[in-house]
Image 1 (cartoon, rainbow, N blue to C red):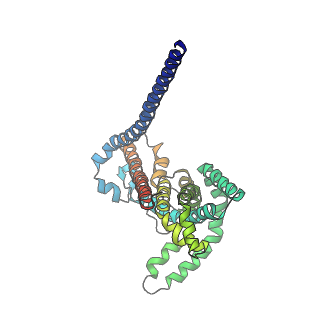
Image 2 (image 1 turned 30 degrees about the vertical axis):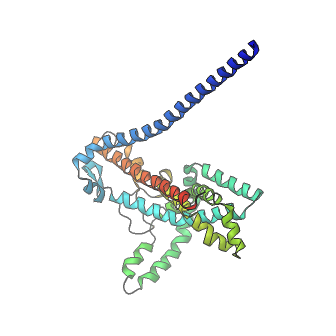
Image 3 (image 1 turned 45 degrees about the vertical axis):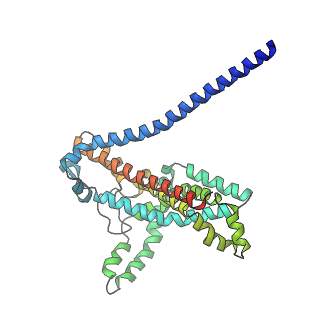
Length: 332
């Protein structure tokens, strides 16, 4: 009787300890989740508060549409940096998205065993390389290649477009190379490689999450593997792939070190894909240190950071909504 009582008490004590640990773990996990929200809110609130001086001194439309950036004269036109950011982001995604989709399809559908492990490992290592290394390699390799080999090709393209009767004068200047190899195109080529491993990982996850029944049903109906991938799997994983592209878009939009090394640092509206320019992150990096003593200029640069946070947040939340749509649509 005494032994049974001791056993029961011991079991109850163990259960109480386990429940106590469970409650503490639940509290800690909940606190960690709310801490993330608090940090994000605090960053956004701080940027907004520190942006008030420039927003009070100038209308928002003037800040976003003016092309004159001259902090010494209290002229804060963000349009050249915004346009440069958009151009770099769009061109980067044009370069990187096809590579990411092709590599993701190979890893998820064609590679197997050691090949899959090897390729996936190299993709992970490539994603872990610091961005500054890509920038340094680009200065040593990509810039000379663009200047010596890409420029002559585009000179021919620009000359051919110039003879078009209606749109020649408008389109041709966008393909006329200038400068020494640094500029929007060079940044886009390098950033297309920098962001690719990140998108590949997300796309592979989306493709591997698809049920095997989709593949088996398509192959059973007589479709080839290529047809199955193109007509079934890519469509089924389309929302997930689109979410990866949106997240990559957000990462490129906020990229700093590679554009700072390769874009040229000229605050001007680009007139071709080879033009030097600025992006919002490079504008902050290039001007913040030397102009910290000017309160209005500091507020203007913090406002640029606020714009980046808002845009990147929109891309990330948009990607999250697309992922949820994927799960609801295919129910896996």
